[in-house]
Length: 87
Image (cartoon, rainbow, N blue to C red):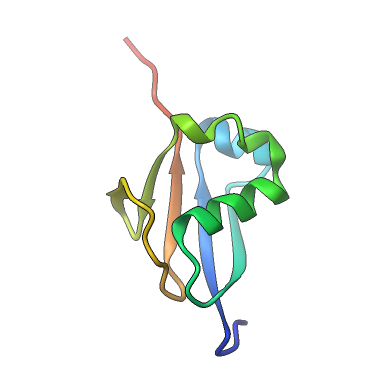
């Protein structure tokens, strides 16, 4: 549980990201004022195999695709969405 100086975000991992991390969900505690890039860096420290996917990931915060680096609120949900191939 986070205190007043930290926040907790939930990361949802799909497809290749889930396979590389060996899990589909994890909670990460970060200092208040952290940005999306801080959360992504934290998950890469925990699961280095995700680093090479990062340039190819779409990222959603609370179910909305984001393109920039935003400040995070406590208890947001971040989804890492690898590209989908098909035909």
